[in-house]
Amino acid sequence: RSSGHTTGTVMANALEYNDEKGISFFTDLLVVGENRQTFDLEGDSGSLIILTGQDSEKPRPIGIIWGG
Image: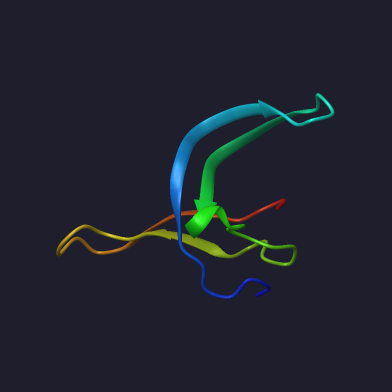
């Protein structure tokens, strides 16, 4: 809704990390947008993440954005 159509690369699966304040976070997928731009924006929760196929492979859903 907010960011419109975006593309990116799945960089990690089941990632746990600490922010600059030392708060621990866990994410199922870490997706980085093209040219290191933000992949999602506030208001995108509920949006479907689709993995695009190689060659004739069909795109398939792999997740939903939640919590930013």
